[in-house]
Image (cartoon, rainbow, N blue to C red; front, side, top):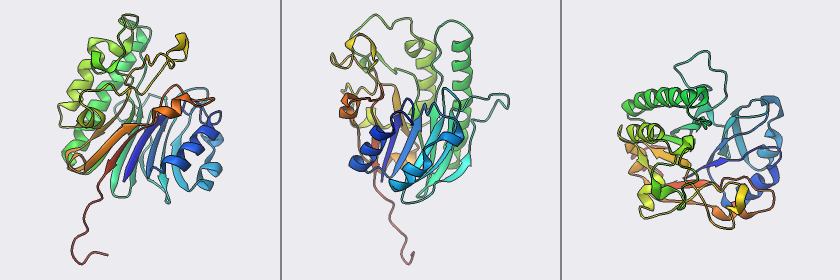
Length: 265
């Protein structure tokens, strides 16, 4: 079972890129972020034509998240991160796909910091940590995938001082990510590629793609019952080099499918 996350950075503008990647990579589950599309403008017909069912929560101009399931419809379980009923930003969606509960998230960027955007980022992260703890406690097979907008360590960014004041690298952001891992989640890319780097994002500015001046922002966290099924993980970095590409590349894991019980059909 192949599960991927992809910050598409405008799903309608980059629909040809998305469809070509779906055709070539054939993921079973895809978490999309930064749709930059209202819900009624989501290109569901083209995605279904490509063989994928979908659930999504759009938002005009920015944000927006979706979960795609190959050959079937994801079963929607949640369209908003709990903890703040007044939060209107479309940054979290959750669905069951082939026996795995998938949480797709687009964590706030937080810039400029300090300031209200960074405070919102940290508050949203606290809500995510609380929800993750509840999911972890169920013992269910859970995957939390998306653009976390956090560079976990200095090994996850090209050698540079230019990002030192960025919200992505602040001690508070990194500490929140670490506290989430400490609940018992496995960072799949780090687990499979401990010596890195495995960048997932290359900014459009300053020729960073050509220079391989990347950051690791997109993470797939696995609950223990899923982590024991992990066989591979990687980044489809060539997708970032295509014409009209998103500034992120798809990040993915491969899980062994659970054995069926004797007599099960």
